[in-house]
Amino acid sequence: MARTAEVRTRREAGGAGRRDARRQAFGEAGGATSRTGGDPRNDRVPSRLPRRPSEGLAGVIVLDAGVLIAHLSVDDAHQDAAFAILDTEEELLIHPLSLAEALIHPARMGTERVDLAKIDSLGLQRREETVDEAVRIARLRAASSLKLPDCAVLVTAEAFGATLATFDRRLADVARERGVTVVGV
Image (tube, rainbow, N blue to C red; front, side, top):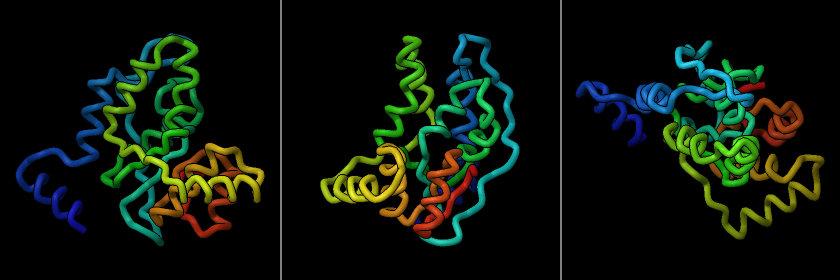
């Protein structure tokens, strides 16, 4: 894959890889912020790296909003797992609905621009929806008990043959039933 060769070339030349750039971004962005306004934790070390997908397009992970929510909050039970998922060389995709969902609490607190800058510093690729994808999302929503944002990330993972990163057990179960590799749960 061309991206793998590019990362290898950057490393051999002494440049930072995608994971190194994200680690720098964690520090530059000031780390995570508490939902209650507490001090950020700047010195977090990921507990593990995510597994590589066993099927589909290796190197692509679609993020559910819960991963970003955990990353932005120091008091989230999934924060260590979120850091482990984000600390990767793999391409990370976010659907616009997931991004909006992750920014709900910051918007209530008036910190959405700060938190959006932190998310942007992670180097995520934003997934734009097509009409065909909207139809697939609607069909999945009609046929399942999943919420609309969960349907959006699952359809995106299916479209890319990508791994899905989520802490939502129901979403993970449906994704696995549909043949999608899941990390986080």
